[in-house]
Length: 212
Image (tube, rainbow, N blue to C red; front, side, top):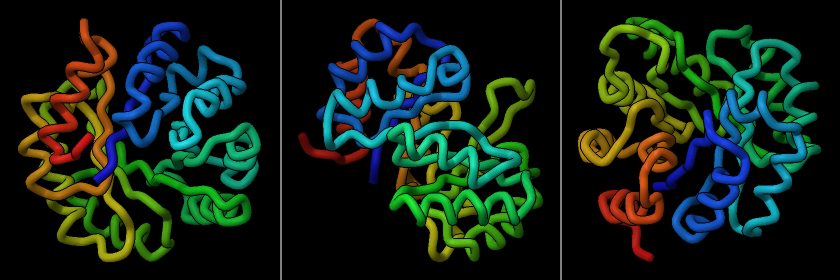
């Protein structure tokens, strides 16, 4: 099970300081969509320099131009690029092809897929052979949505692809999420907004059963 730190609405210096302090505890650092808009693409390489073991995910949520946009990110140093599950199959397949051509990875984000459609769309995407499929609770949706419920659906449906979970995960909700054994846990503000990010991350690390 891997741990990914999501950087969204955060200043560059604080982001770099936090990642530097957590480089031995996290597996992947995410250049979140807001952060990627605020920063030049060179920010990807800035994080790559922190540790050779740290992978960088560019959360572009690609909707069109799959190969071209993924290629830009991969050439800039990204290890993983995200593409939206809501887009055309061709766009997802193009993004996956770019990943294969560059020896990189793809995460397909299920944000916006209705709960009743999760299983069917999950099966379709699983057959495209991306590296990760992510159930993601959106921060802008003003209703209760359950990452755990959609995670359960994916766990019962997906046969080949690793499963990731994101959205509102903290020390309180993490244990319930872990009952469905995701392959990748994505946590953002619970760490970045903490007074002591390393302390919180170590607690998360322990709950996940990692040893460091």
